[in-house]
Amino acid sequence: MSYVTIPSATFKPDIRTPQKTIIQKGFPIRLLRIITLILLDGISLSLAWNLAILYGNSSYFNWASNNIALQLLVVIIGISINGIRKLYMPGDKRRDYVALIKAVCLSELFLLLVVFLGGLDIHLSRLTFLFSWAFSLIFICITRFLFDVATNLLRSKKMLLHSVFLITEPEEKDKYIQIIEQDNCYTVEDISNPSCLDLANREATFDYLRKEGIEEVFVSWNSIKNRLYVCWSFHTSGIVLRILPNQIESYHPKSEICMIGEFPCMTIPGQIIAGIDFWVKRYFDLASSIILLILLLPLYVGIGILIKLDSPGPIFFKQKRIGLHGKEFLIWKFRTMVSNAEKLQGSLEAKNQIKDGILFKIKDDPRITGIGKFLRCYSLDELPQIFNVLLGQMSLVGPRPLPLRDVGKFKTKHFIRQEVLPGITGLWQVSGRSNIENFEDGVELDISYIENWSFWLDLKILLSTIQVVLLKKGAY
Image 1 (cartoon, rainbow, N blue to C red):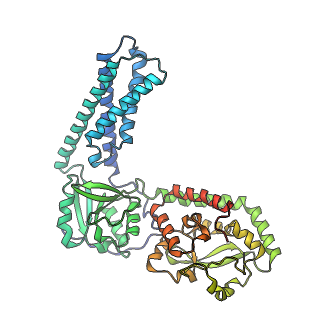
Image 2: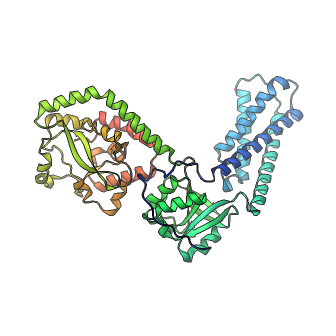
């Protein structure tokens, strides 16, 4: 099998943004497998219950009025518990017969509690439940075994196989192909070297994978240089990423460990609908910014009047900040300092309280005006940045955009912050605000936000921001 060469391509706007909103590769086959297993379990449980009623029922049971509803309850409870215990998941999960037996026992116990403690007017013998338990165990295990036999038979005929792409060094490819082929469910379509994941080639690589219909990509551990970029790229592409074992030196928050043959493999599943959560975030930002601008208009006017009465100078303060991909943009704030504050900063550098000197913050800054101190205390000076959100330069939640002076002191590892939309608030801000005096500690929080990001995390940060602002935690 030869190596493929992939040309370079353009970059996407945000590492959480999909190139296209598509259904996860291989999802129809996975969905068909789950539906088939659920139907087989439903038929097994229904048949088991009917046989139990036939051979073990007391004379008080009204077949016509009670059986259909109770039979449906049996099926729902059984399938639900199997789903909760992840017995419809791929790989060894669905073939774990010990877990399957435990799930059947648990569902029968739960059914007993529902019938006898739920106040239902149904009279059933103990023998009925014993028969139901025994028949359910037998039928579910048999149908699950037959399903696996049928699946393996189809795969031996090259059907129902997942198309995969392997990225590794040439000298390691035979070893990894051997590992992949231990599971009789993959077909390796192509192989490439690690350079296809370089920044200049990455988007072209994903275009190629989408064009070829690749469902999963296996990457050797040593082939991933910028793991956070690469993991997000796969997560938003609808393609499952499996990192082949070397030594698991770190664990990505969105990953899970599965077995490929006898080897543990870190797996980052692709989104079922690629990028849907990011577009929900973007539309939420747009809708929220429009609503907030309308609702806060009287507050904007009041703050503007107070600033004018307090000190000479403009109402708004505009400053160049570094945003997505290192691009400059003008951030808007209510002015909280004297009009020549930036010129005076040089004379105050020696008082900087950020230990590594990358950021500039001092308590009781002499440049802050009277009304400015109040605005900063409650973060009201940040409200004009809602305009930046509306323009798409910022998000409500994300790493804070920093001035040119601060970004000029960045180390290489810090620039990951610039690969997502900056925000008005973020994990750093709700974890201490100005009380965090070491820039590295703040960056760790930003990286943690990027790694763990979800729309629900954004909502949690927004709610925490309200609490932090009202309690004036770490504000100066």
